[in-house]
Amino acid sequence: MTTTRQPHVALDGPVHWWQDEVIYQVYPASFKDDDNDGIGDIRGIISKLPYLKSLGITMIWVSPVYASPMVDNGYDISDYCAINPMFGTMDDCDELISRASALDIRIIMDLVVNHTSDQHQWFREALADPQSPYRDYYIFKDGRDGGPPTNWRSNFGQGSSWTEVPGEPGTYYHHVFSPKQPDLNWENPTLRAAIYEMINWWLDKGLAGFRVDAITFIKKDQEYRDLEPDGNDGLGKVRRRTENQPGIEDFLDELKQRTFNRFDAVGEASGVRYDQLDQFIGESGYFSMIFDFHYADIDVASGSEWHRRVDWTVPDFKNLLFTSQMSVQEIGWAANFLENHDQPRSVSKFIRDPEYRTATGAKALGATYFFLRGVPFIFQGQELGMINAERDGIDEFSDLSSHDNYRRSLEEGYSADQALAFVNHRSRDNGRTPFHWDDSPTAGFSDSHEPWLGLSEKSGTINVAAQENDPDSVLNFYRRMIELRNHSELSTELIYGEIAEITDVPDDVIAYRRGSRLRLYANWSTTDQDVTVPAGKVHLNNYPTLEQGADGVTLRPYQSILIEVSE
Ligand code: GLC
Image (cartoon, rainbow, N blue to C red; front, side):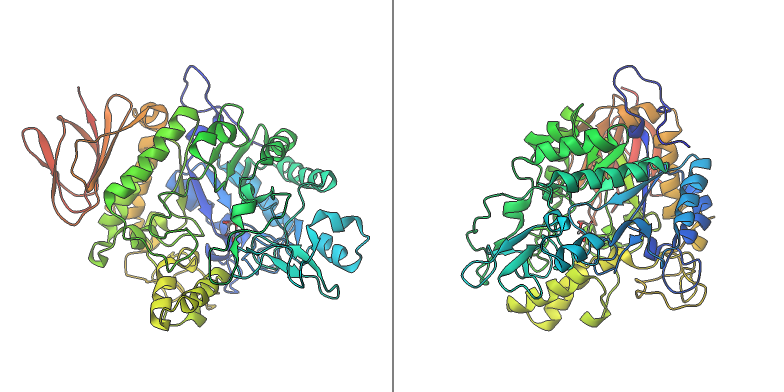
């Protein structure tokens, strides 16, 4: 079975097989419901492989389908080597890997090893018997002064990152995320060996690698000291003592050497500074690529507190984007994305005037990021220009962090309406709504069963059926971008060419060069923008025409072009 392969563009110098992939993220619960129970499944993904092939993508990242009580939608795993029956069986999973491979599509899966579910057998045994060897698979500590060991606030739940062990007053276990996601103790070599064994078991099945979840949290500051409080609850954010802490390098290096060394490992590695990129994605770095959240989270101050909204500008965005691209270019390869299962829809986030949240807007955003240097990730539905849902009450949300954020906003003194607005803007449910295959009441996601989560805004055209044969659709624009990047005379430059920002453009225009000939211009505003561009061949344009003058062009609102200049 194919797991690794030769890059299709022959080049001198160090080239890795994963550099020219185009990766599509499937969120299984919401992609396609094959058995009509309202929840997407693995057979649904298999049934849509021809669609994915027609898009031109080369790799699929499958969000967790492992056994799980689904408190955090599968990011709480109760058995790493079993499939959640709601998604199918292990045979289905094996079939997905082999059927995709037959289409020359590789599969990576989520690897969630900072924590397990509290329903994992290891944790159950750790609770049932304090003398069990599994006790040391997790982090248990004695409390202090009648309370938890430290004043750390968890990422989810907005309370302490410690939970008292039932039946053992004064003893606590640690969780960076929710109390139902106890942290694994990476200090324990036996635990680490068990994790490596599990990872290799999956790789032997023919996976091409992993998207490695929340991986910079595996090392905790071993001194377990209190934090200076950063909220009126007297607590401090847990990440200040648990994210990218000194000593993590030993764990990450060992993890790589013992498991995914030859494979594609994309790290969700928050908290990594640009001056640390070499360790993470350099020639012998821990990962092939890592995601950079700086510009994805431009609209909220901390990335997790949704009421702290930021009134960002396009120059702010450009600054973050190019700082990131330039830093990565010196060292390695970027993982470029606009959306994922933790983010709202990009059209709704980055286009602030609702009138411009159109196919044209979706294409402009797509072109802006797709030709950046690195691997483009497409989140399901992004290629249709899907937009956020607008929900009328907090009860309509499923995502646990949406409920946390709602409560936090009320605590901070906002009204219920304001709190709901923050959650509508930022809820992770926005990206998790069922995929729109057609315009029927269930969007073609299930045959007739009501989907597990309310659909996002539908229109007659934000669905595959309407866009499939429309040459001007967002879907066909994405197909064209993929073809240009991977299968055209521009491929070498679009994949491997150097990137440089073009700075002599208006504030609201984002522009960059790839290699010596190619230039991307995107107008991120609702007004016309004049830019100076030498004459050349336009390979991509999200408008039917382009207004060209003697020494430049006028970009219409959200117009975006890829041009090959002759000089
Ligand atoms: C990652 C996942 C997110 C999950 C969290 C805890 O950030 O992307 O969905 O809730 O880790 O596992």
